[in-house]
Image 1 (cartoon, rainbow, N blue to C red):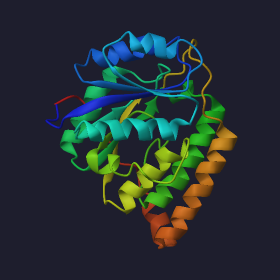
Image 2: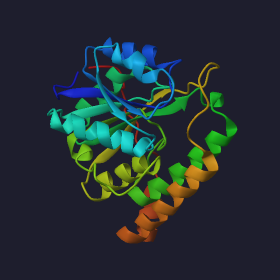
Image 3: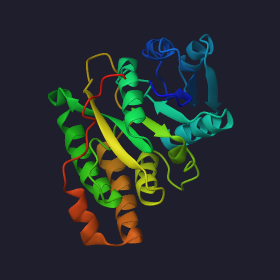
Image 4: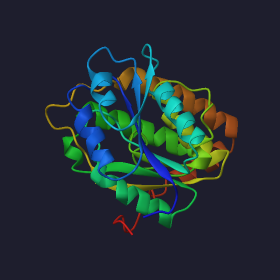
Length: 250
């Protein structure tokens, strides 16, 4: 595995059904875990508080972007070199984390995305269409192809964490990080294929395809214009998205 000092960050909101299993699976990796509760009104914070993790709480719902921002600041304060993010609803498997970390070791100064490319038929059609639109636009803004720009399972190196103060909220924050990391910091992005997990028992997603894709699209268009070279950026974004050739742990 990478020699970088990393932790797992889990933002969550009303995840009492899944959060214990998600956190315990992350703890089994032997890595420190930070959980940011975004104003849950169920038993989520009570469940997490009983586990050996760092729990940070928002008094009210602030959105996923602010939850990630809170976690990034805590990770930077504690001196971590990188963060691996996982959603709290059980969609992501901690078993995939070593593969992301191994890919980060082979590709320094890259964000590594756990791209839901396996069993894609499990994805609801509305989500699949929304993700395709977001991939197209964000790849254009980043001037490079990126697979599964909406995946919340990612390895962020410190240079990406330092973009914590980007003015973007909600699900737009994750798009903003990708764009600023590639354009302003010169980081690369590589994806590790993971399974699409939409089995029964997961709560309905907080992601709203029409509303959130509209917000992401508006932000992305602004960034395309900001960075210029619109046609050249579009052509570069049309190449095949880079995947980690050997995603097994080192």
